[in-house]
Length: 112
Length: 445
Image (cartoon, rainbow over all chains, first blue to last red; front, top):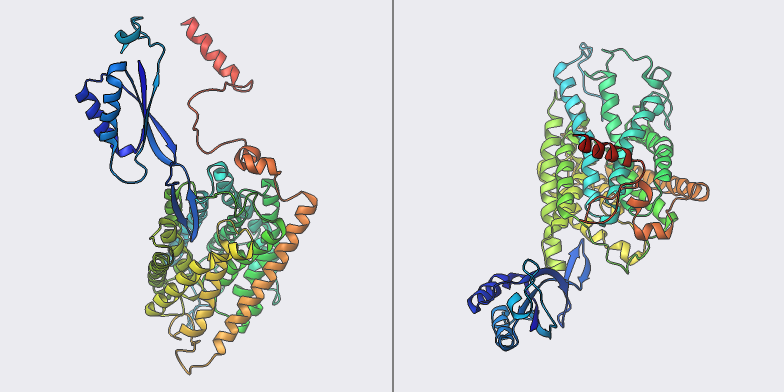
């Protein structure tokens, strides 16, 4: 199994959710996050004083997938998240040792 | 505040219309202090919101009491050119219910309470420069001393019938000199003594809630109609109405001017700019609104809007930490409004004095304005700095660096403005018995 994590622009959430549902993903976890990549945040002006705000709002989406689906799923997320502008975010995957559905105790792929 | 023009045969009689109007104006001015608290409170960081609100709010408590005890008597009693004196007014001990303010149609009580609201908001204005770092006890004592040795005499100079500035012919309709320059200069004096916030020019100190700032600015604008239009102490000759119109006009012009300046210099029309511009316009029209025409008010507002927008950056250049720009907005705005009387006074409002652009085109009034402005500025700056120095040497003016960094709300008030934590913590001993009792009842049931 793989854990696919995407840190992306908040306004892409709906597209990503729809794309994942179309792919057949049943569940996902969304967290509000903040951070920066190469673009280093933005500038705000208060009475002429400029403040750089490094950390910009992002969302972090996490999905568990079977090994065979992982590559394709990453592509689905990347495609849905892309706007072509700077700050679109990153997607990565990690191996997962085990997963358990809390309600039933099912393990592994059955728990997804 | 010139004595109303009365026909010789008519002794003033109590006017219920003017009295009612002035009671409403007094209530409007009272609302400005909590409005100011929100204006300032939104501009500080989350960790010092409550302290900022409290520094304004405490003025409502302290100044009210000392105004009744001796402030009103010393400010407005007849005395000499420098200070007033009226033993009947100590503790308001001997004022008749229908006794009239000399030359007017409103009771002494009404005049007293209207002026009280001015005395409350003036020290509260200073607090914006001292955000995040002043011990609350030291601030409370500072207000007490400052109102006694700075506000009371200055109010007497400018508005007392025998005050030197009033006799000289300095025009200060509703407090450009006595309130705004006075508070702004005091703020400068105090911050030169107590120094900058920890992390000034290094850490981001962005406003934590611009909606609160807008709410506060809106309340200030609303209350300012009482502040300005009420300062004629009645409505028998239309000067109060002129003042009401000019208040609105100058404020609008200043807001637009500040926004235009900002768009050109910094590329955006900001919320804080709109709120600050409005306040700058209100400040500038305060001394001048009874003397200028509505077109003059547009000029006063626009000039103040641009000048104050430019002035607020000076703290970074000179390195003094005027946290919320009390000097840049109130002192500079007050100076501009007071001096522009010397140019724009038409002679058709509160007095026959005319500025450079009207009448016989002389600089006479401008020089008088300069005298008032710079005397108050110097007196307030020096005495306030001395007060701050004395308090710093005795009580200590500032909280510890640790307390300042972790938040003055928690350190000085044992409270926090917002609850961001969904979990953790427990109930301490003082609150626990109630909880235990509630649990016991549940078991019994």
